[in-house]
Image (cartoon, rainbow, N blue to C red; front, top):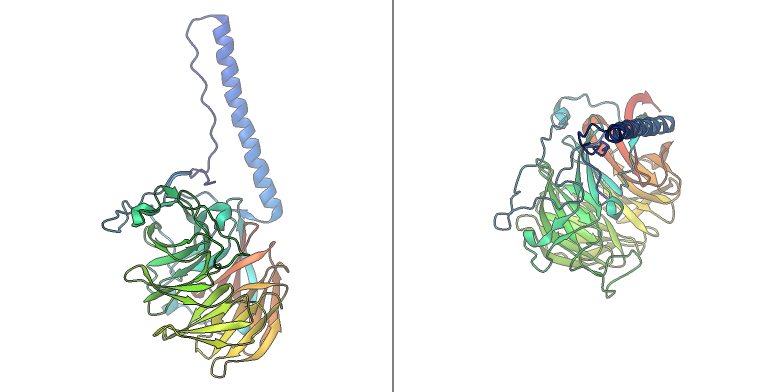
Length: 449
């Protein structure tokens, strides 16, 4: 399922013709040359036709990039089990780093006063992204789930593919000898460490030796679903350099602002795994309820808020003693949550209700709600905290919401089944990914609404 890293077609070489001087040999040689030329011509025609189709669809095809951890269909180079470091460098990674722009760029007008503009649209059959995450340091990670078994990494300035990371690993090389041989995962969501050095990626299920009961969204505890893993990817080498076993069907993942913990919601286990980053191990498993998903952590790393999608509630998990409190009755099927930069408000998408709600964290009460479209799934927030950006899965749209009064100020059409979204702060750009394999990039302009 991994694409040819070269991105080029191959024409079989013609067999060598014996130099017998006979007429039959010369005919055979001529026929072989003609066949090779015809094949090359046919390949050229196919390339032209594909280019025409992509051009007519308005979607820019993404050029091939090197595979970051392995050749097509092969197991990646694994770290040394004794040292835990990468066995070999990957590729030269030279994204346009955006971190420095944070200090020098003009602040721009408030995001809730300006219009978004589409600046790029691209895609390829090799993508089927579930989520996108900006590192805020020049890269955007797209997780292609069990449909492609890859992570696509893009440059956030050029929107070009930097590399493709297969999800194939040898777990025994990472200290899990009970799982011999190469296995595959299914990248779902990702989260970046505060220093930008690593990205943690949840794997829906593992597929291969030692795993016989893959995940299913309709199952729960006691169903016998295999545990799965979270991968850590170095943003320097773009290689998987650590794996950590968690619960069944891990979905959302978040890193605390102090970098101490990685939090992972396990959809089928009804739990949240707490990983201590220094040791790379799970130190606590917190029971939450039916189908936990989105996570947001306050700026002091004291409290994690978790949307429990099989309910109408949001859990409040203390990160000091891991006790659980609740914000009850926010609305049916809370899925994704974000917290305002000042820490005063929590925003949650309600998948079935088609709404986004604003919660006052001082009182734990919903103070406003707005309908954005059918099945709002993922959401992101602008750096200034004034705008929310919500993908509506069944409306094939993305809505921009003014956070102050929860008013939809702009709605734009995107491709079929938009599912992931992220905001690149330094560029004031919103990335939307669709299951169809198409990405859209919108920019907050200076044009007034």
